[in-house]
Amino acid sequence: MGEMIIELKGLQFYSFHGLYDEEKKIGGEFIVDVLARLDSSHREVSSIKETVNYAEVFAIIKTEMNQPRELLETLAQSIAEKIHSKFSPIKEIEVRVEKKVPPIVGFNGTVAATYRNTF
Image 1 (cartoon, one colour):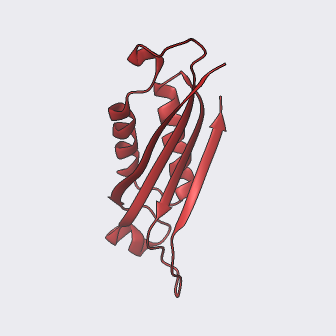
Image 2 (cartoon, helix red, strand yellow):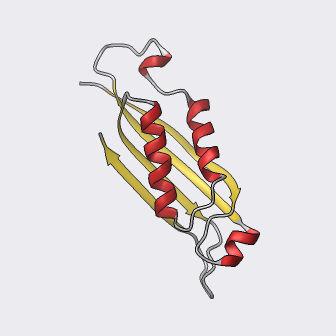
């Protein structure tokens, strides 16, 4: 049984997600990665209906990134579920949302939430 893996990586957004009022006002930089596994048990993927349209996946992510959420976890879950509902060939999806400058005093690095689901 074959498997096709589709990825969109390093997608950069300036968005207003966050738990604190300041984050909601000034926003911040986020990076989104998506990995989707598709069943490709037949020999050759020859139609867009058998796979995923990258532009449509990007449009879903962009829409979700423009809807402020308090938690990265909520955002990652929502992105994954919306993509899967649009593309039924997806058998497993993983969405990672990284916040580049979290509001943590003395913290030097990034934070991220990753959501994975199998269908």
